[in-house]
Image 1 (cartoon, rainbow, N blue to C red):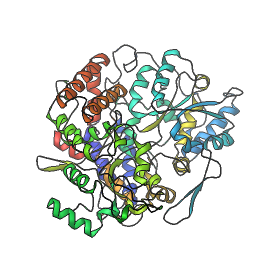
Image 2 (image 1 turned 90 degrees about the vertical axis):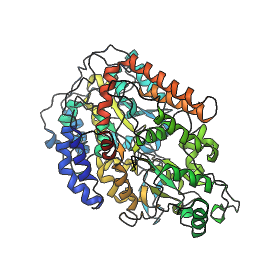
Image 3 (image 1 turned 45 degrees about the vertical axis):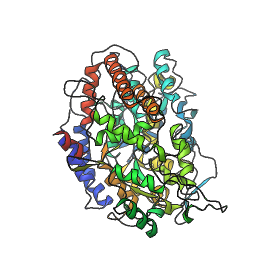
Image 4 (image 1 turned 30 degrees about the vertical axis):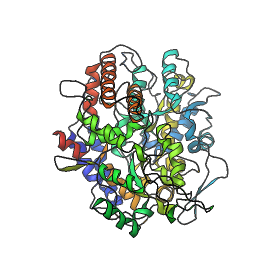
Length: 587
């Protein structure tokens, strides 16, 4: 495993707050290639020594490899997209692609707007009114360039896991290219459904960790296992920031009333601690001031918060709080460490917000939170970047959004802030797909093309696209600024103006923990979320909740290989942000 100092060097170069984002990117690019190699250079028993089952390591050897070619990557083109298109053309010319070949693509239904937006729809910059982009059908565009059609099937997001695992069992080869959540990548690798893409990366160079627009390093970590192998493509950033109604916190009368009630100034530039979040929830819950007037003249009643308390997405906030308080999944003796005061404190503080929550928070997630925020029903939340993109077009407007660092806890008199990657969209090549079995390069090359810097920018700028940006150049592209940042106000202390939100994200990345690469994470997140929801809704008490979380997690670890899981957790710890490394003495 790479020494974490190597990763910290990259973080310092990439996220130095004293320079602008554009300067930081320029300084980090050269270091990124060398350090990216170092991240995956270490050897480890990541997939060693256990029998085959979903979530367990497989001893089956992946024998499908990149088709031999005579043209080097450099000769195929200057960009990942050019190399992908020209490689397909070369394979065709060499007779390597069978007649009638097509790519079968399984994707989450809510991401259909990314790939196949309605023809003629337009994304408009809400700040300037200018057109950002008219809809582009990405699948048609690929076919026009390569002559290889793509047939897409759409499923509920959480159904994708079961479908992918069943493909490994039946070897039906229904799909060649699968959209999935990066949290489940280890299960897909171990079940044998994910194709090892290491040779293809070397051959075709998708610029995940290299080039002048690499994937943000902490995101890229999730696509490599600790043995150095490469497994998938990024489709979305999916990290979390704190948002609140900036139009309210900047109201002088509300500022004065808050200070009178709580004895300190309203945190205009975002809360430092979760205690402040709770105070603001108490203060703003039920507010019906003039800012709450809707276009039809009615008044919207504000709830103090919408923090997810359902059986799935409650894991986001729990993971943030757990890490900020100093929580670790394992101790040095490989014991699971959930049944402790850190877990209790995190859950009790989460429950303290229940009285001020929108009720939808207990049964739903972003499909209700986004419109609730748009209609002035939510004061604060933790969310993906797309919340402003979608909600600001509603009555709340652009001035109703402030984006800030996630709140934290003081540990040993030091403020610890953490944010997490959760359910990050990614893509894998399905090992048993019909086209994959014939010529695996083609579905791989489709993924390389789709996540190319320019092509991915077009996809993210599509009307109806819901994914967040993930490459370093996305944050400085005018289309992305118009898509993600135009509605947000400047962030004090950070580069002013419309680029301020982009700069804020750079700072947020300094607190970002990498993907939790664990086998059975789908099962663990379901277990934890279900137990937490039972506690939040008074079905069971805190002791029962924590005990069941501990016992269930122990069962998963024992069944899927505790030693291997412990080693995976060590890999996760190497991606901890600097504050957590200091807290835990990680060098």
